[in-house]
Image (cartoon, rainbow, N blue to C red; front, side, top):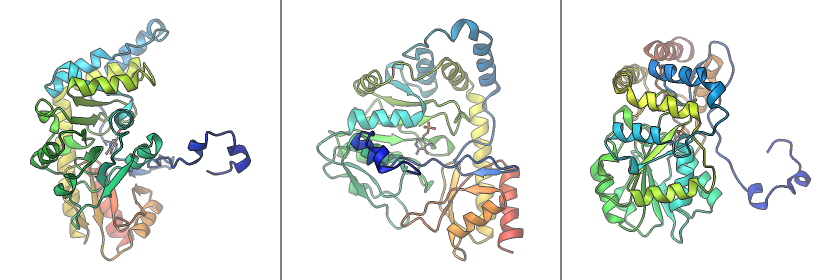
Amino acid sequence: MSNITTEQMRFWSPEVRELEPYVPGEQPKIQNLLKLNTNENPYPPSPKVVEAVQAVLVNSADVLRLYPDPDASALKQAIAKQQNVVVENVFVGNGSDEVLAHIFKAFFVQELPVLYPDITYSFYPVYSQFFGVKTKILPLNDDFEIVVDDYKQANGGIIITNPNAPTSIDIGLAAIEEVLQANPNSVVVIDEAYVDFGAESAVSLVEKYENLVVCQTTSKSRSLAGLRVGFAIAQPHLIAALETVKNSFNSYPMDRFAIAAAVASFEDQAYFEAQNQKVIQSREHLVEQLTALGFNVLPSSANFIFASLPSKDAGELAAELREQGIIVRYFNKPRINQFLRITVGTDEQNQRLVDTLKNDILK
Ligand SMILES: *Cc1c(COP(=O)(O)O)cnc(C)c1O
């Protein structure tokens, strides 16, 4: 906490003095920067999204003085249609980070610990501390895979990212069903931030399992990280808990721009599918090229890859790429401090990365 003195800190709530907040990937303002560090989509959102924002803008003199729909029902309907569920199965929030925060508050503040892997989304420990959630961290195996049998012990809830971040590895629905069946009295949350890039969604299991919550976002596969729209799909008795938390915190998390733009995105399924296919193809090509340069790349079902180079320290490699104007994510943490998490860009962007590695760094 840079230049706040202990004396000034006396004004802070004691528990806030102890918080260790999440550190997002940086958004630096460097010219000719290639940003491959926060898993943003390299393509623009659907043109229909831009039209929808413009339509709100045109009416802004009339509508911005009015509160938005507290229930964001137009958005819930668009999501329900696209996900093939009913509107009673849908919860929406200001980015899936907010949806996840409400999930931790609504389900995980229990006597028993919540289970999640040692290597996963680094917001989970932050929310756990924030809400006083007890946790039990379960190591992934040496191939960075989930050990399903570990999730058959007493717990106060389970959260699994699928595909996992930052490893990019996915688990199939059979493994998820095994976890759901072994835990009939706990909520099992599947965070599917990257599911549209090649994994199978657990939304199809929501009707069958009363303990399942699936969380998704528009930030990655819909190119809307700047809009802040995330959602959860679950049976109505779980959605009701999330609505209770949301309405005890902020009744209007979705503004008029966010609702209109996200609706337009969910209505343009063709654009969404075509764009994801492009990212998947670019990913496969990037993996081939990096493998040829000597990288070990974990099998990815996401819009990023997790790669290590045996001949070079990952922290040094990240620093040298940065000097060339290319930013990737490096986690200086046990087990993964020799890996780089690299967001898949356009083919041109990926080529710049490969050429820089080949011609400037590994020459
Ligand atoms: C990006 C990400 C999120 C958060 O997405 P937002 O909707 O932008 O808040 C949640 N979970 C995981 C695993 C992510 O990578």
